[in-house]
Each structure stands twice: as C-alpha cells, then as structure tokens.
Image 1 (cartoon, rainbow, N blue to C red):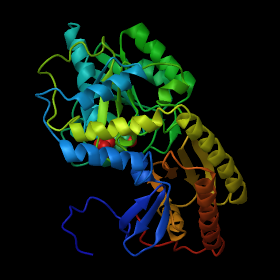
Image 2 (image 1 turned 90 degrees about the vertical axis):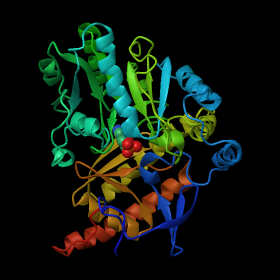
Image 3 (image 1 turned 45 degrees about the vertical axis):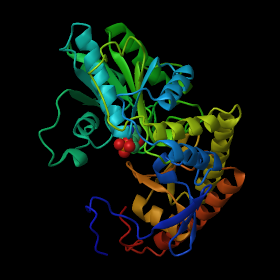
Image 4 (image 1 turned 135 degrees about the horizontal axis):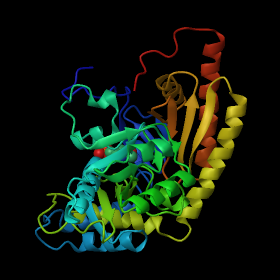
Length: 405
Ligand SMILES: *Cc1c(COP(=O)(O)O)cnc(C)c1O
C-alpha cells in the first residue's frame, strides 16, 4: 500500500472505525477485543459516555486560550493531581516525551538553583524507554533509537537494570538525579522491585540526588494503584505521566515537589498547547472515574484474575509462553517465538496485544474491563497459542510471515 505518511512504523494491515468499551470495530466490520488500549492510553476504553460528555461540553465552549491566561480546568486538574500524589506542582504537556523533557529540565534547574549547575548528570537504566525526543532517546540509551541521530545529548549514565552496585558506582560529583520507570513498559514489562526503589530513594536522600520517575505508562491506575510508586511506599521528587490521563486525548504532565521545582520560575518553561481547556477538561473527566472509591480496587482485582488465568494458560502452553510479568492491568507474556508472530496470531483470533522489548507481548487493556473481557482474551490467547504450537510441532520454519510490528 502506498502512503504519504512517513514510513517510520510497520503498521498492521488493519484500520478501525469505531470503538466501544474494550472492543474495536475495523473498517471491514470485524470486531476485535483490544488488550493494547492504544498502548495503555484508552484507560476508560472507547466511547466512555463520561468522556464524550466532557468533550462535547467543553468543545462547544472553548478549546484553547494559551497559557498567557488563567485556565480554570487546568487549575482544577493540577489541584486534584497534587491532592492524590507526592507532588505540589503540575505542568501539563501534550505527550509523554514532553513530560519527560520537563522532568529532565526540572532536575537540571534544581541543581542550578542550588548553586550546583555542574550536577547535571542523570543515571538511567538499560531497557528504559522515555520517548523519542533527542533528550529522551539519550536518556534511555537504546542504541536502536539513537542510531543516526548523533550527536546525542550529553548528561546520562545508563546502568544495568536492577543493579544497585552499578548505580552506586555510576554516581560522580556531577550526578544530580536517578531516573527510572517503576515498571518498564516498552522494555518488556519489567517490574522494579519495591526493595530496589526503596534503595534508590535512600541513595538519593544520602547523596542529595533527585529521584525522577517515568510513570507515563504505569501511572493513572494501570498498576492497580493510582501510581506504581505506591507499591514501594516511596515517593519521587519529580515524575512524568501521560498515556492514561487523557483517555485518548493527547495529554501529559510532569509533577514535582515544591523543593524540586524551586528553579522552575516564570519564564523557565512553557508550552503553547499544554494543559489547554479542552485537554484538561477531559483529564478531569478521566480522574472523575479513576478516583471513584472502587475503581482502583477493581483494576487490582481484575489484574489478579487476569494473572491467574495467564498462569493456567502458561501451564497449557509452556512451548509458547516462557514467563509472565507485570502488575495490575499491565501484564507481559515472554514468548518463545518472535513477538510479532505472537501478536499476529492473537490478531488472527481477533485479540489485539502489543509487542515490547525482551521478546515480551504486552497486555494493556482498558482499566474498565471485567471478567467477561478477561475470559474473552484468555480464550483468544489459548487459540493463538494452539495455532502457534501446531506450527512449532510441524517444525515449520516459516512462522506467520510478514508480521513485523
Ligand atoms: C510512551 C512512553 C513515553 C513517551 O510518550 P509519548 O507520548 O509517546 O511521547 C515515555 N515514557 C514511557 C514510560 C512511555 O511508556
């Protein structure tokens, strides 16, 4: 198919026309159970009446004003986010990468404001993903994403995942912060242990470093807690969120304590669109639902149910499923064959899943799913595994072809 879109994606040969709950209908009228959620974005599924109402109500009134004026919708959303988190301040962005840029800038500015502009290096972890801007690809240190985009932004020291001794060894006089995803998403749903996060917090406190979290994927209820850092009982100094907070509308944010944000004064940062009335009205509508008293308990319980069913699935298909990972409704299935083949086999069974690094397939369903959707997904995964097993058994060297994601 010829396309005028810059060919940076290997897109699956399918387009969608409509969505409802966890279901998507293709332009050819086929229905798919979506356990990808537009990459953890459709936190409330598709066509949620409360989000549609917010979109229409604000859409009829005013979309955009710029940040040269007061934005009551943004004020309200920021106030609500600070009330339920570690943060004292919020800056709204349009994407996760922009939110991460804000996190990095806040960390550098903090040390500059403290009289130590030289403390501008940030320790990051192998397998991380922080976005596709020049700063965020340098931060993550993934050579695949850096290739050809030299010179890379200096200031990042990438260490092995989960290796506390490597972190300690990487700390120099110029180190100002440690940046980590509490659950690596793109890297393959690698969960950072609570012990490790606690150790990082302690290290940061001892060494005068800021703890920066990237919860662009794990935040806003995805892990079964509002923010994944809650599982470890530690709080960051600065954090990025995005994906789930907009429920499909482009919205992100970085959040900081008063102390960490002390350098971010008038004129130091900005965004034309960031936090506009339309985006933040929808963010408020997402929070209306996510902050309902039973919502997170439902996510956690559904996550436990999904995990139980996945464990049984793995027992039935050990030839295909090597390992299970994750928390809440952020689950990873490490497979024995190429992830693209697994995703294609699931798609053939009308289930959408998302490939990630480390040969892991991600399940990031809407947080509103219940037992019915869990059962539907497991049935489809079962059929996909059986189909893949038949291929493995037939010793076919040509697994599902041309399915690169
Ligand atoms: C998706 C993601 C980003 C980048 O978000 P964009 O909206 O694509 O810029 C950053 N960090 C993590 C952990 C992500 O999952």
